[in-house]
Image 1 (cartoon, rainbow over the protein chains, first blue to last red):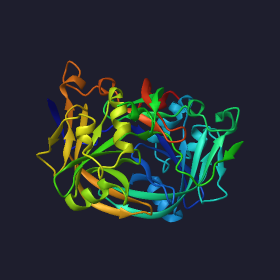
Image 2: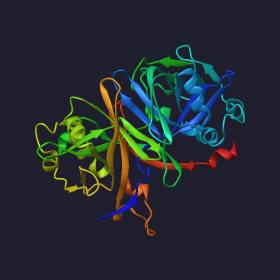
Image 3: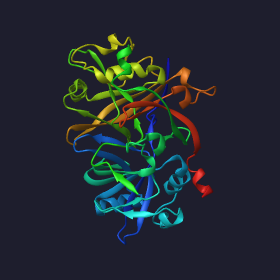
Length: 188
Length: 188
């Protein structure tokens, strides 16, 4: 028996991504989003949804570019902070003391200290309602050397991403592996 | 110093959702996706991306409805199985021995045994490339009594959702809480 919670944005799991952009004065901005996901394999593309009221919305509309910066658990405070304060009020890179790197590929900055970043060129925008979807073609994924294993491969445990429970408004780390995809289902 | 991995769909975290739909003969189908996320708060909406080659694609195009079924970790084999086998070949609900419930709100079935489901009416479709985005307005979120706490509130630990690492193709449970949103950032 199931209980109805009504028409709500309740789902698990949500990502936690900090979106990098530049404003008209080239001031960098960083804003945290949980509404987003990969949306296409070819071209590789990721979608994020923003309210028009956000500073980042205007930035991306003008530059048609953004970065997705994946914070590790040690940056949970930074991610939370840049999700609370508007870039209209301050340069958040300075406040949270993160180093910005100007992307060579797109007109947006990324966070040096975060373990993994995606550089995205906007290829579509979609008005859904309160939120606008920005579909970004992923031009490159860059990962810190420190988040690679001995053979140079990406190691999620070293990236240490976290997820967002929008119901209780808490962040949660990613836990243990529970099975291999395209394999464990064959046991049924 | 960061290493470039190129233009790839590499990101953390990805959800694991089983999408419910009906085909032209009213045969129910279930298919696992990791490309998706919440995309709007008003109307509450969730996006999933599907290749045209999938059986679910045609089903949703015809019915303009789907359900998002969130498996708990104990259903990881079921979720993996329905992500591997096409509904063109078999009725997967029967194969994996899951009980389908016909939604009262949308023209799609959901999984009785899964702890949490979203009933969605398609309000937009967007061609991105290999994948098509289906934007579903969330008409209701239903949660098992067993996934509620003593006060009747949703308990993510009881839902026990998991996430997908597309790099190593492994499923991972959601781990410990690491902080409260809109709060922990104030410590900076």
